[in-house]
Image (cartoon, rainbow, N blue to C red; front, side, top):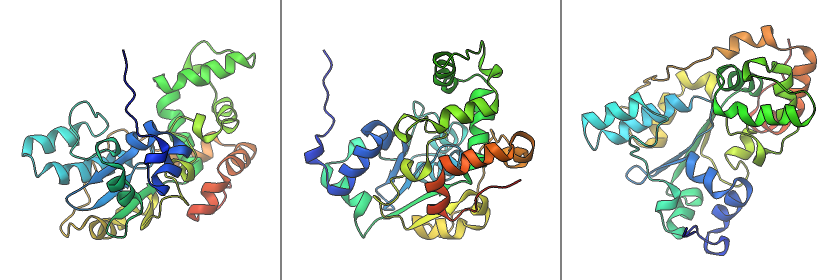
Length: 260
């Protein structure tokens, strides 16, 4: 017999309740990384430097445990079965979780990415490498009468078109609309950092985390170099599609609409 002990919406604070209603309890738990010691929360956007952020911040938090814990976090920043030094939302009482997402004594930040490059990065890694995230795309293509035998047979145009027709809640987090992913307009962020400016933003991250000697340590080994391939795989029509699909991201985060 399974027991569902997720908090009832009425038991959550106003901000937490709205965020969970928008993205679901599972997504909020999966992508929220809380430091009780340093009173900050990093909300993850997949394909926007999340490996680098989790390795750097996670290594900093794990240093309170042991050098071995730091190594495990930094070697496997995406593998939550190994070790995570962060507190997750489900581990907190509702009143404290509301403080995390809304309280003045907490710092909240995230890292976002130019949407066209991020979408292409998701395609190059998850679809062209045949990972599990390709399965819903294969299913959607089969349902519309254009089946593909392998994920590698899916063209970028086909992928982008399927994604454009999905609501944010139904999109895989690796290409979900970022404004929805982070609850932008629901959660009050102290900083939304552009991935393209992350190398110059570690001083700001140090302020947000309260760790003066935080260093820019890059541990992500899975870069697809998508930004350099935008001109190769995009057409003007595809860029226009991305601009429409991710219009809220372009508007919210100050990115210019893409052009070739």
